[in-house]
Each structure stands twice: as structure tokens, then as C-alpha cells.
Length: 265
Image: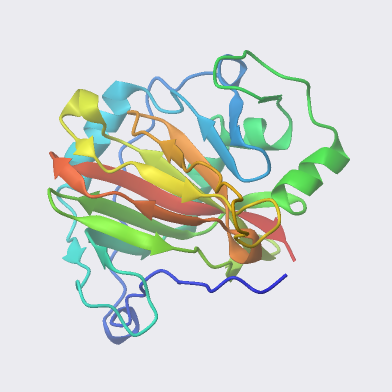
């Protein structure tokens, strides 16, 4: 099977040339939903999982107000050769403490490490995963979230063209520090049509079963993940990443908090 041509995300090459921004004084997490009232819901087996109502709407609204005060920078519309086009406003910071809060103070840790997976968005809890199944799903033992926190704002007319997310080697601070590798992208949506954001869906393009387009072979339908306030999206990245895009925002603003699941290396 031929290697698929990879279109990486556009990288911010200016980040190394400027001082690191101070860590924000992130608002507290209030009125979080209990892990027992949430579930991992499979949109595409082994590839795309959502957690509806991961954050309550009021907390999302509070965070949008706070994030609006951060010094966001606009990603240039002309990428480096071979990179995907991304036009949005973003803030990026190394903040292991906030990553740990997102991992352990929310339901994420319990859901990833021990709870069930629903095979359909309409289902309730599915069967619990055993250790072997969890390793197969996540890639190995999940040890937390990438300390690199990214905030994305997409205004009207902004989008993220088709691309793949790369896996990265990171270090999770601690005693001792944990060498880790990212395997799944974590996106937390703070806005949706309910808040006036129209468009901005995340769309995945599964490959044909044979791995290549054959004559008269129908292409799998794209998987469209609509924005929902407070919904978390997890999707596999690295060598097994699906081609995907963030559609153009037609109205309002799309706000996203981004990190990655990390496994021990």
C-alpha cells in the first residue's frame, strides 16, 4: 500500500524567536459534570471519540470571556511550502499545571483510564475496556496531557485546511519527569451554533478499505463533527491520523482549547 501524502499543519515558525508568554491565571473549573454522567462516544472506531457535555455551558462562557483578554496572534494566511493553510488567532503557552488540571480535575482521566466506551452517540455506557483494550486504543499507558496548551479563535472567514496532526515527543514535569509521546489530539469546543457560531465543523476523511482509490470503489463518507458547547473531541494523530479540516466559520466565533493525550515512551 503506498504511503499517503501527508499535509502537515502549518507551524508557527516565529515562536522560537519571541519570549515565552506568561502563564495565564486560568479561571477555576466550576460545576463540572461527574465522570459517572459522561461517556466516551465513538464516532469512528479507533479514530474519533467525543465526550458531550464535558464542560458545562456556563464554564465555557466564562472561559471565552477570559480567553478574549489573552494576547492572541493571527496565523499568517500564506503557509510554508507543503504546509496546510490555517487562518486563525491563537495563543500558545507551556503550562504543565493547567494541563494537569485539565487531565485530573475534570472527568478526562477517569474516562480515558477506566470508563466505558459507547459505540454510538445514542447509546449509554458501553462495556468497560480492559487494560489490553485501552493500550490498543490509546497506544500505550496514558500519563496525562501535553503541557503545551493552545487556544484557537476562528472568526468569520477563518478556517483550517485539510491536514494531518503530527505526533511529538514531550516531557511531563514531575518527580520524576515522564518522557512521553502524543498520540491523540484533544480539542475542547467552547462555542457552537447555540452561541452564534455558524460553520467551523471538524471534518475527517476516512480512507477506502483497500487504502487506495480503486475504480468504482465508493469513497467512505466524511465524518462531520458539529460544534457543541462543552464537547471534547479526541482523534488519533501521528502515522495513523486521518486527513481532516476545520471548515470556514460563516458567522460568530469558534473558540477551542487544544492539548494532546500523552503516552509513556
